[in-house]
Amino acid sequence: QVQLVESGGGLVQAGGSLRLSCAASGSNILINVMGWYRQAPGKQRELVGSITRAGSTAYAESVKGRFTISRDNAKNTVYLQMNSLKAEDTAVYYCNVVPTGGNGWGQGTQVTVSS
Image (tube, rainbow, N blue to C red; front, side, top):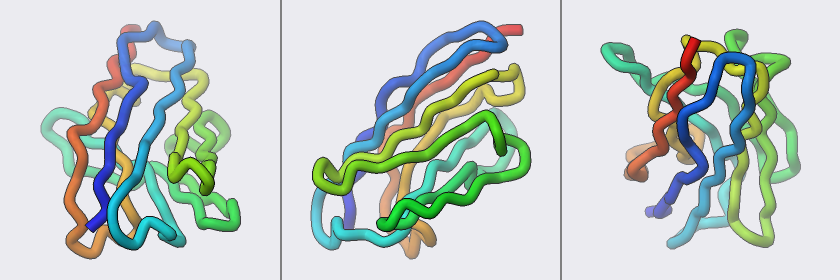
């Protein structure tokens, strides 16, 4: 199991930016693919984007061009830079391995975008 701790969320106005961080620890931390997920109220959790250990990224269409995922393998940390935030980006954001394969979830970090 990989333990995950997300941080960096908050309240921001539409058009603003936030940077989320995710610290990973535990067994098998040399994980190939890490991802950021989000869950809005009343909706299913969705994968926002992912990054391989080599740095290749992929994004959901809804965030492409606005969000950027990066990682520091030496620090076992994954980041999500979110720019041009919209009200519909409001959600609890989580990081996890991709696919999750039953790995547990962290507490997430709340992002609220006011319009």
